[in-house]
Length: 167
Image (cartoon, rainbow, N blue to C red; front, side, top):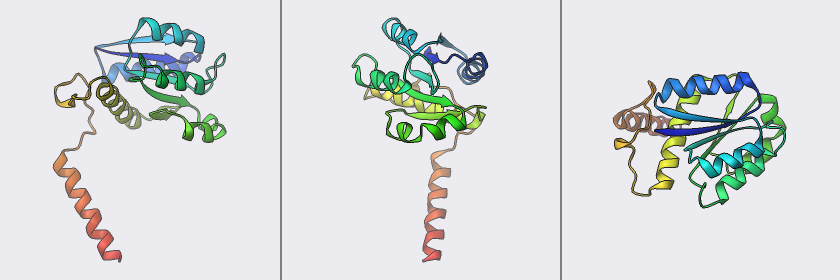
């Protein structure tokens, strides 16, 4: 069972994240913190795979939450996905680019982007926890946007051929 922490003080954001998490990961536990300080207590009692941090958490600087989760040996396996509005992301552009976050999502949420970032965050978290991990035998949810290895290889060959034509 995968565990998630949502650090956000906006009910609509929390509801949107919870809804999509449950859609793509039905057997899950979700913990909510309306404050950045509350997240630290969840670090001690829970071991989530993914931490969603809103850029406007309020009482705590999101960069501190992100840094602490990535620097602590007990929490460094957390995948951190930042959330916020497009305006908040523009205002924090340099901090986001230089942060240790593993992903970023904008409100309103794009479902395809959410599904892919969730899957990637879970794979990353599992691989940090266990270097011998392979996702074939895991409880990582699959999404309708999966592509086979063969299809990806065909796309790469097509791209290569097009690049050769341009030269």
